Image 1 (cartoon, rainbow, N blue to C red):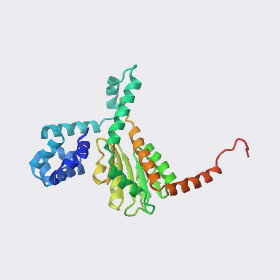
Image 2: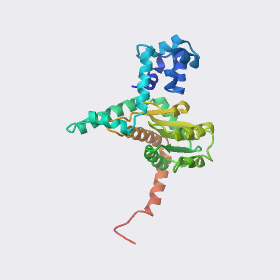
Image 3: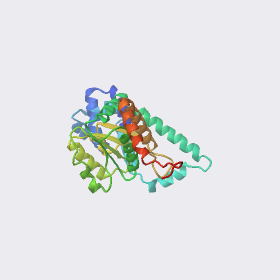
Image 4: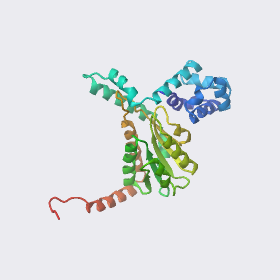
Length: 286
């Protein structure tokens, strides 16, 4: 479990000053935690003992262990398919490939879904169900495919859903009509993209509410996101798996469909009528 996840699960145990320290860390994660204790405390505007108490409540033995864990996370964040090849070879055995993958996927799914917070999900659903507001979606080099998956589902449920496509230089053109309160959903996984961070800043500065799908090591976009979903993506492979992202999407779409069920039924019925004009009729060819 990452430090960010530990904070999420232990937040209710923190005092007001400890929550302040945790918030400062999450706003510049993990880098402020890599500073010496006094600098971290000064940045968070709390005392050094407050930082140490927070660290203790995370189940760590001291500030040195806290920083060691953060440094390991930085190392994991920077892993690429090239650097993961040797690790994958060590973890995979010809006779255990299916079982190994199944266990890892199951563990990732349990960790990811266990991270979800009911009140946070409810708040996100209410935002995405607001008909007057637009929903903008953007993904990275690999995660664009998952952004498309979400876009296709949301488009079935409601209107005003926009997928940012093409080169990142074209993305601002999609935001020309963005208004305060619109939802901006982004997918940013390791190794995090600067263009994703820049477009999220543009959306945020123009009043959009940021919803972030990221991994367990946390994209820097998390500092401006109202809703952040940490999806465990590491596998016994040179390539990360977005299976858990799909699971969270499926859960959100299911909840959103139930939120305004009658509207969804009418919209899908209308879509089915429109699709009849394009479906092939092999029994009665034109």
